[in-house]
Length: 367
Ligand SMILES: *Cc1c(COP(=O)(O)O)cnc(C)c1O
Image (cartoon, rainbow, N blue to C red; front, side, top):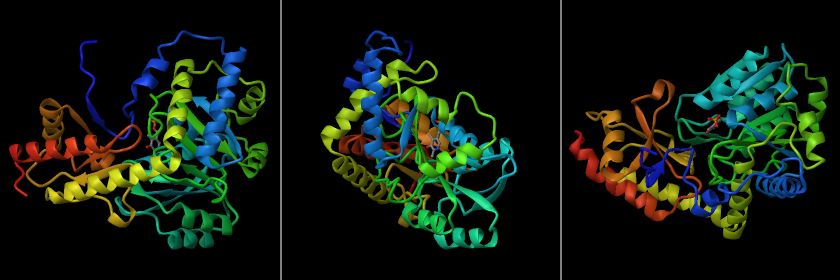
């Protein structure tokens, strides 16, 4: 390759992978309809169920996270269904767009970006629109660095007796998530965020209620069809050729996480997020997200006045081998983001903070 792999890839996905995960992917191919794959898919599916904290069905799709988002929509809804989209950023908007693309009647609920959705406001919209069939919501909005209070939001949705589809793509495996306790009917996640695995696999859980909905749902589906996924999983297979190499990676990465212990994984993410937020504030920078709902997997920071966000990213990489995330959508150039999810430890964050301290004054910051 003609480029260098950065030492400190601090974007919120794809995230760095440990050597043992990368090495696992170097193994040769196996028959994806043979006994070795059968063992591996059963083992990884069970592992994911424990991370999702669910006894619902869990399927592993060969796709990026957006594939799981599309699967959630097309398997449970029909054109003309009224859907409440609770969006607090770019990824929430995307889920609403998918529902709209397939013909759902989408009611858009949003907040000022950088803040979380207030469960009482969601309740009001539900009360005012009794025809709503399903609620789609993002647990952790990666574009703004905000985590919604899923315990409270899911309670409101379940009290109103609606179907609940949750994008937990950048939170599951890094933040505690209680699929069954919260009554989440479909939950989506993706390999390249907190799992220490390259992009290529998406994960999705399906409740009994979601199965009921899927029987009535008439949106077109083929690649994403839950029914096909279930009947193949019973034989230890996927309907279509899976990304076998990424399965190898997932298999060992899950073992790595369980060896560390999920409670320790969660605590590490809390500690690193606290360190990141305290560190950037002490440099005189301003957090973009409302701190009471700031994410423990990604920190969004205002690009300070007098500084060009593009210059900041360039100098961080050229001078310190640190790759930062930029702003997305209308936040382009206005914020930058530090990903701290997956395979990340204290010294990685210390290096980012000292690199910022070095670079910022050189590009016009005098905070
Ligand atoms: C990364 C991400 C997605 C999916 O993006 P892909 O590029 O398709 O993997 C969706 N929602 C959130 C919150 C994400 O962070």
